[in-house]
Length: 402
Image (tube, rainbow, N blue to C red; front, side):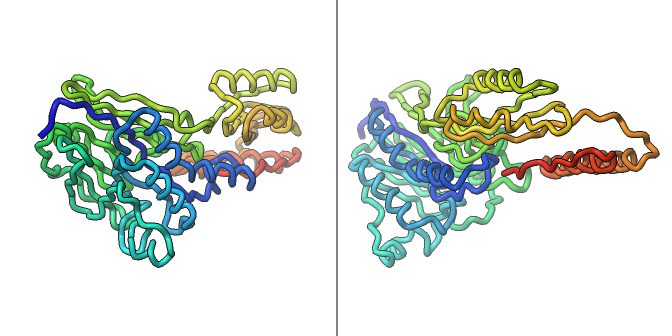
């Protein structure tokens, strides 16, 4: 058995090919949505190109390659062609809760044959069992890859690492796992019973693998031991589809040396980023208001290729249209959505007036609201109701894409 050799691979997951992109808070136009959908669907091609250029010996993909069973066959064909172009280097796939490997799906050879599609390339290893399975690494007997698959989109409550699969005796042992890290706190972090296949950082450490390639969460997150050495990571999704996937998107280049801890590097995965910018424009007129927004965009690192939502807050005079003042900035970015959440200055109503009683009831409803959506509804209702009761002009807000 050979030993004493390093291993370099590229890790990526959560591509969600075929996503509808009808939400996410960006209010994309049909044209912008179609263009972004094509960029989402090109994730496999970008991953293979990055793996090739960085000299990776393998590509590890721990799940959620596509978004749902109804993804177009042409999108899957594009994925298969990208993987085939990476041959003879191997690709290891551990299906997740979106791209589950049950019968009748795109992982099923019978379905591909029935649709007249090419089979999965020979250089691709797909873990098809919910039980842990160990497979050898092509052309190297010092590496073993261990993985498992979801067979349905149903939430998995069992802990996949309790107990953990036996660590293979090879010098390098790789684990592919799709599931919820309990200590993850990113914006897409599920809480409580919404976690699927939950596990802890301690369970990762105790499993003893050389590396744990993790999928399911959509932002980069490295799991380290107590000395700070990386044990595994989420690469996050490589293409931002909405505000909960804001910021730069990356692939992970991981190097496992013959001795010592893993080295993790990031490689840009997307030419544009989703940006969410909130700006207080209280009492600003057109010129200073635009300057304030421009400064906020620069501070947020917004660049020309980006997809941006700007939310305007603070107070503005009755009848003001601050969003209209900002919209010409759309020429500076790929896409700009402007959300006006400014409020007109208004005197506090007396507690016995109709406006005062209305405001008191709405504020109580808002305080008890269980989520941000209901709180936002209360805010809008409070503003519109007070304007109507006080005889002020009623200006409904623009529709918001959440």
